[in-house]
Image (cartoon, rainbow, N blue to C red; front, side, top):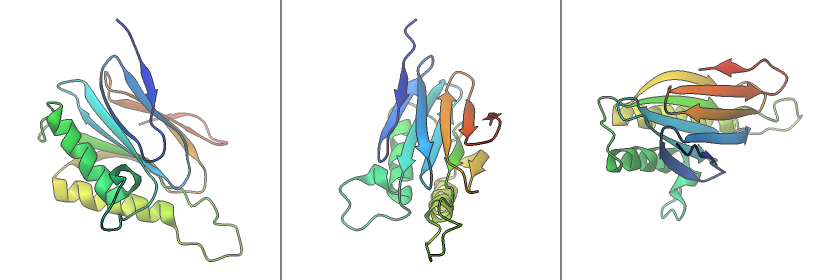
Length: 159
């Protein structure tokens, strides 16, 4: 079997069936939204940069509100069932907390908006590794539903 691992960059989205895998590298304030239908071993990931999209929006995947909704729709188009689907979130750090500047905590806002949209869609969040002050990378395997989270200066964690 051919195993592919696709890196999902900023403002990108991908869907895959096991044994293929998805990853997001260098998440700072960005949030990786991961959806999974374990019955199909189908997974999807969107790498959102900012909380709310302007209207009109050219790149839905760039924003937490429109990107999360688009990922949900794509999962359904690919055969996922809403009642089996779950979500995990990674990222959303406050990268510049120690600076003497007022900087909106975009990471926290991204996570809040994603949670709100998933609640509206009826998708349960079963795990998170969000906020804090350190960047992360996420490696998702739809075969197991597990995400390996590598955080700067911290031991690896599986959610």
